[in-house]
View 1: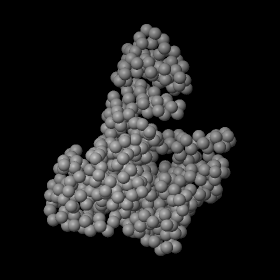
View 2 (view 1 turned 60 degrees about the vertical axis):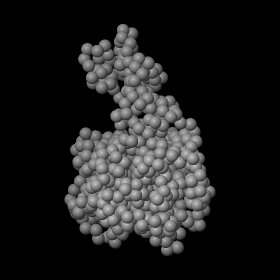
View 3 (view 1 turned 30 degrees about the horizontal axis):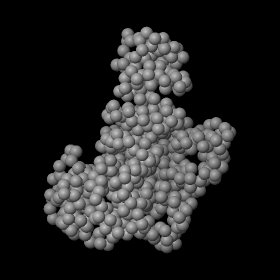
Length: 624
């Protein structure tokens, strides 16, 4: 990162040094910055020296210079951010966290810095939390433009470090609901749940913990019984509204995967009748219903939404859910089909995703995954095909990362496509065309592409290699292909669960999924169950359906993939993995695979580390 242009105006003492920097002559830039600093020691010169030293690879000199810049100006946001980057690269994570925090504290509007803070925070668990740091994270949680997808565990660890909140969370430990209710009634610190960090966090991410899900289920039931019994949890109605709305947002984000007792269902029916009898219901009642079911399914949902206040009011939570649904229904009618859907497996897969669109998401990342591979398309009018876009998250990320590209995103499911179209409109993305299509029939569109992605799609087809051949026929020579396929070794628990589901003739409807999860201890041992407890997908209804109950699934191993790539004359370019995995692989291979593209060695590594590809084998290859 270099200084903004306004800080590098012509005539400054550091102009020549910055010109060397821009030309990539970092050695001269360093010497020129140092010489100029003898005459005029100020923050901009130290910052420039830090940037040049970093590019030269002298991290010690870079850090010292940036610290000097901060000493001259304790509010120098760019210096904090650059210093944080260097410390992150040096694996000095706590120091990096401190400097990212300072950068965000001085400028909350800088989304790039805030996202760095959130991503690093999400990689940690906390035993002690500074109140100022927690307040900073709360401010970030209020931003609708930050991605918190993997923030759940860190958020939960921060809550558990709060003595009062930890006591509340403990009420559900080894307890029935009646025991929980008794403890909660006796609690003197129930207002702890009004902590903004807790309330703003709900619905921004999924907490993949059985204990938290159980606690939320119990709290939701307690709220329902208190409200329907005419009793108030808090004297201030606005506090009740805020709590109900926050819990409803989290339940909605999981698509109501929570177990629901028969007693709750009866109360809920009464509540539903009350809500449908008026177009101006109490917000507490409406949000409470939203803790159990989609408020847009109420027969008078449109009229209710029209009567709710907008803006920053907490009522925006149920209001936006209704309005988003109505917008999706509008888009669903406008979707153009560019191929027929004739294959019987494709039709079954379509039916699943019409009922359970996958996944529900809020904010995409805005950078390309791998600049060394995908960077060839930066500032180019590349034609890109997303073959199986689902709800559009991957397409949106490519649209942000490659704004000059022309993207065609296709899927079987009109429900999934309508969600993607809604999010594209809300995010102002205009370089994606969404269409309904079956990969099997895509040759008929008579188009070719520079880049095709098909993540988590081919393994749900009747004949994955047939689908691959179709995509290759659409890919231009030298074109790039990104694929993601299930690992057989990583999914042994899923394979066993699917066998149990088939043997016991367990359905794949909402009730059956909830019951299977509730009784999973009867079906699978603890070691096998542990796989699901590490998966975010297990804690969301559409994602759990996709994870365990899919109508069609194939798995692969790396030697199979190597064979497929060779037969189809595809050059393997590398995996999309985190840096920690790449570092462990380097140690494992002892430098024998500098390019990290030897699939035989990766196969050996996976055999010793079977969870490596728990998400999928996500990789790039090139058409020869």
